[in-house]
Length: 320
Image (cartoon, rainbow, N blue to C red; front, side, top):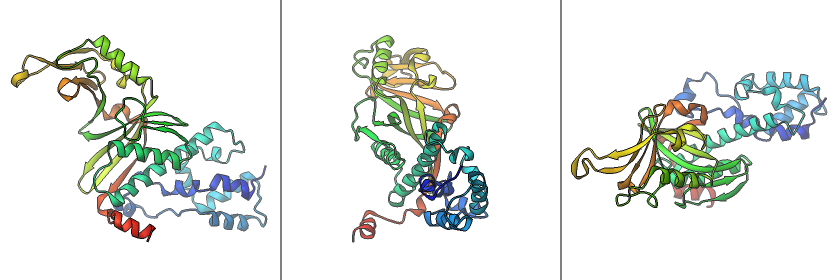
């Protein structure tokens, strides 16, 4: 079994250089703490390596992998869970392809968020996330089939070859995320409190348009923002209103004291839902962060001090 330079181009076209960026926290502090900054592997580096190893660029695959790791850096294994799978001879190796795609998504997410904050100091929210999420998928060779383009219509915001997503953003509040969802004025309001049965049916009807939540969560700190990206199946119990026990939400003070002001649930697995008539009967989810950690795709720390460019500078650099 042998590997040609042409085939290597397929494996290596940007992938290894992306892996080596490894920036779960791309901040000045984290880079300063490292004893070494891992090199970026370019196509020329690969060509040089192939020429060094063999005059014609061909080699036994076992020997090739051995020398490749030694030549470039054994840290490669830290960035690729299945290194053997990466060199698989089968283009239809589903596990290997999925692993490569995950690497691309993670690194393009970090590049996109850091790039955003090179110009913007304000945190990335709502419709901006829909656009950035689309860019991340596109740069990772995931075809975009349909976009909401900032529309407030309920349900699917982004339809791609890897799934249909409802985009959400949220800000960390202690140990929780508060995530807004559907406005349900058609089935419940201050003038028509509705029934839980009708409310759940309406939510279920809107849920049919997407498969997963694509959530951008942020923790705003002094001079930096930590972002986490979650992909959570809509069928997950914590996001399923039918898994909760619903009851009337009663006002506790002022003119609404003793009056129904919405609907709420009991606490389920340290999470809760509620609907507030005063907020367009919007469904809100209070999610304990520790309960969804397994769904995290990646994270990045963006230093606001690195925000040293504005849109005029950008124009001048690229177009003038």
